[in-house]
View 1 (cartoon, rainbow, N blue to C red):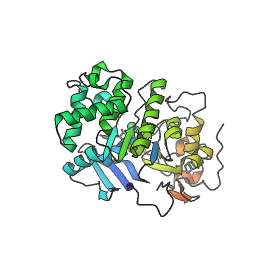
View 2: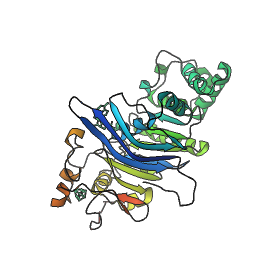
View 3: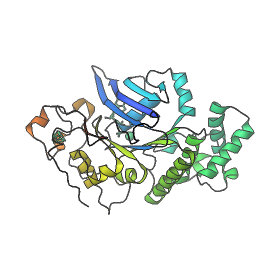
Length: 336
Ligand SMILES: Nc1ncnc2c1ncn2[C@@H]1O[C@H](COP(=O)(O)OP(=O)(O)O)[C@@H](O)[C@H]1O
Ligand code: SF4
Ligand SMILES: [Mg+2]
């Protein structure tokens, strides 16, 4: 488990253990997330990184009980002393509104075009905290101010379509934070934005996190984002965690060939947010995960044993973990 806090500190805020998700198909259940474990403490930020299709979003949605009925979720996710896996939907809804919030890549999927921003923000607040409409609208204006939207009182009366992409993402952040959650799950929150707006939103999230003391799970395919906001990183490949590490060690010497490939694919000249694109091949679909190490068809260090033996997630160097049978003998160089 990724765990960046020294021993003796209080229990983790979130502790995910062996979380698996399968989807029922016509003939069989396909496992798309396979025994994923990680943990984080109050105020910390964990990056979950990996190419598209590796299971990052499904893992986050599983924590929040937001997967379709065809999903089978097993394992454990203990949040603040409560088990989220198997929690009745009504209780989970309470946790989602009050304690854990989520923001997604595309704000228009979460904002209703038919209602004003003020209406949506204030209802999000009242649904969970109650109180008068007036008080909720004041809170909504305060949140818009906090996320850097000029003239918040006036903008409360406007509809989502009159906000630019960057401003809509700020509204989404205001909506996610209006009930002061202990944990924010941000799933590629800046991917759809241009580079300048993207870095503004990242700065905003970092400063809000410091101000509000919340923990954050940052889901992204972009290691530049991980470097700028995270304390620790969990790398996912084909439904599994393949490396976990505190952030500095990860960037100075990755332990898994896939991590090294990701780092190699982010030369300093590449703008933040550009797609990872230099590891040959793609993540296989869950119905065709390779036997042995799932990364072996793309790995330049592959040996015979990799094609038959599924590697365990081994603990190394204190609080790091890696899933590669050759990790002890490989020294991975990353171009600087
Ligand atoms: N509702 C679903 N039914 C079946 N398969 C799904 C469903 N949602 C996602 N998947 C599959 O799960 C895998 C992981 O998807 P996802 O978590 O969205 O990846 P990521 O967020 O890392 O890009 C993908 O192969 C995707 O096709
Ligand atoms: S187990 Fe083998 S194929 Fe997999 S990452 Fe390690 S060296 Fe590469
Ligand atoms: Mg995703």
